[in-house]
Every structure is written in structure tokens, then in C-alpha cells.
Image (cartoon, rainbow over all chains, first blue to last red; front, side):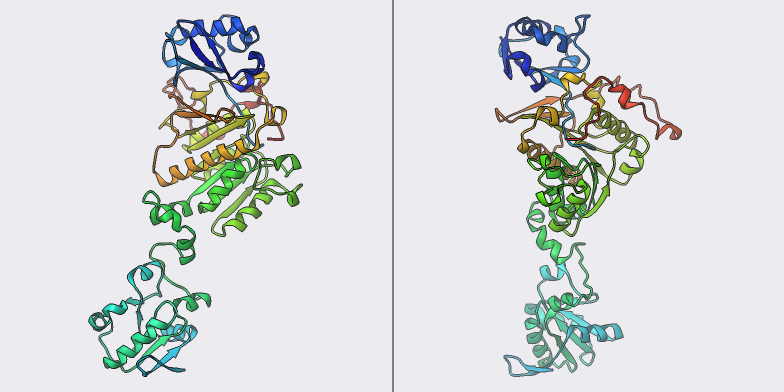
Length: 93
Length: 395
């Protein structure tokens, strides 16, 4: 099982949970397990072509999966997958 | 006037303004009878250091002519009076002690030399900094000479500005076109209730100038756009990004990469914050991290979503810390690292951010920008259209 860290903007779609435990042998499997458990996250994470949306960054532990093997990146028990969209909250400028 | 010293000798005492007249008239030997560390902080121009304990040994080097007019000074006038009496015993014929010492001299607005580049007031104010080996006098002088632009005088900008001002950052520019609103005060601690309705840049200026007279505040009461950004940022060494919208963040990124200005970037929402430091061509840029802005539903604003007030303080002071490290050239700034802070769990997470070789702005294939294109930027509102980047007026 891997831990998926849910960004604040997606938490309404995971019942308010900031972390979710899901199974999967690679990053794609883990994310598909997540969207299986919480279908409302599907369209935020994946495009219609099944690829990750470009505005969603995904990290395995502290490394961007784009520099690893993308959705094919192997996930071990106890790994953390971080989902990270950009945030712009701050001050008007 | 004449006074009696402990040795019951009569010496001449003169006021600082009298000493200044004589010094300006020339042909005066000026002796500083304090310790070396005091002299190092500040002394009178052409004052020669002869510490009290070394008077007998060193005075003849400093003042070989015993008939010459010799004026002594110290901190407040006591040590110089005693030294004057000693010089008379040694055969000096025309000695005076300056009453009130360098303290009174400075109180009267007369000039001193500060070899360190800092005034005595600054040495006192920044003493807890200069005690740190990583800062020291040299580092403090770097801070005093630093020019930092804050994008936003709101949630993130307020605490950043407070600590940068307290640290003695010599020039702080503030970009904001908003006025202080009651709903800001839960987190924007640089403003206050009395200043509701005032321009945020003006309100922040009042606080900063009250905190530290060493800081020059430059107000940019407006918004950054493609027409003014290069002019505005060109005057600064470092930019602190606390903007509330994606078009401004992408615009700042593209302009700062072109002009090679480091940007300390943070954002906050709810109980979450993120921060990174983008140093062009040394590490990734904002576009390497976020090539595409998210759609609106994934990018709510603080005004729509809410934000814990203290989050602004936590992330804003982390930004100030990054700025200070960049100015000092010390420590490890968050270059190539994105720090996430989740306040409900009190959890920090660090992620690696790498330069994207395909980044259109700083990547291998980014085109060299000719001078004629420097001030031209894409339409960021269109780039972010449909995204949460619609400009919002409230942080």
C-alpha cells in the first residue's frame, strides 16, 4: 500500500481526507486506485486520453515522476505519492 | 573652562563646537583616548588612536611636537580629561580635552568616520545580527545595501516586509494596488484598524518607517503588467512573489528569467503553503515547476476558499529568510526544492524541482531574446484563461 497525499483543492473529493492509502505497483496503478475509490478525482487528474493532466505534478516520495518513468514508475509498500497542483494564493499585486 | 582632575591639575576643556572650529582651522593634533573597538565603531576624522593604557608609550609617535595644539577626546570626556593631565605632566604645553566626548559631538550633529560603514546606532540596532558569524558587519552592510521588491503588500508581503525591514534591508519596494480592508487584518499584520481604506503601500510604509528608519520604502501603487514589469524589477536585486493570481506569477517568472533576478515565491491556501526560490539558470524557474496553470476549480483564491491567518506569517517569514540568505550568500536557499507546509498536521515536505530542458523560458531550447523583444510578453490572461488565474482583487 502507498500513501497518497491529497492537495487541499482535491480534499472535497476524498471526503476531506488529506492522505489516502491505496494499492498499486506503479504510480499509474496507485492513481487509478485512487480514482476508483474516489471517482470525482478522475477528471482532475487524468485527461480523456488517460494521461496525467499537465497542470498536475505527481511526486514519488520527493521526486517528480516526470524525471522517473512517469506513470510506469514502480511503487513500493510505504512509498508516498504526492499530488500537487499549482497554487496562487497570496496578495493582489 | 578649566576643571580639576584627580591629580589636582588644571586642564583646559573645550566644547565640541569649539573643537570643531579649531579642527577646521587646521594645525591641530587630535587624539582619541579610547579603546580600539570603540575607535573602530566611529571616530573623528583624523583622530589618532592612543588607548589610555598605552598613553605614555605611544603619544610621542602620535604627537611628536609637544608645543603643538593637541585636543583629546574619548566617549564622554572623562578619560580624555585624565589623559590631558598626563600629557601636561609629560611636557605637552597646549592640551585641551573635549567635554562630552564623541557622544556630545554626535549629538550636536558633527560628523564622524565609521570605518565599518555602519553608524553607532546601526551597530547597536543590528548587534544580534553582527554577532552571528554568518552575518557579521559585512553581511549587515550587504543587507543595508540590498534592494528587495515585494509583489503584494498583503498576506505574504506583510510579514515578509516586517522582517526584512527589521533586518535592515535598505530598500523595500512594495507593489500593490489595493486598499486596506477589515477582512485583511486577520493576517496582514503590517496594516491596522485605523488604516482601513488607506492604500496598502502607504499603510505598509507607515509601519516600516516606524520600525526602522534605515529602510527606504518605494511604493508602486498599481499592478504589474507587461508594460511596466521590466522597469519596476530592474531597480531591485531580488523579487518576492506573493501574488494572488497566475497571470502575474507567469509574467514575473518570464521577466525575472530575462533579467536574471532571483525570485522567492510562496503561496498559501487554507492550511497549506508552498515556497521555493527560483534563481534563473542556476535552478529551475516557475514554469519548470508548473508548465501550465490549473483550471479554475483547482485554483480557488483565498477570498473564496479561506486561509488561516498565521499561514501568511509562517510562509511570509520563510520568504524573508530566503531573501536574507540570498543577500548574504550563505546557507542553502530553496533552489531546486519546493517546500510544502501543511499546518493542520504540522508537516513539512520537501520535493525536488528540476530544470526542464524543454522549458520555453529557461530550457536548452529557449531562444535568445533580442533586445527589441525584451519588453514583449505573451497574453498571460489568455494563457491562464479558464484557469484560476483570473485576476482577483483580494488576497
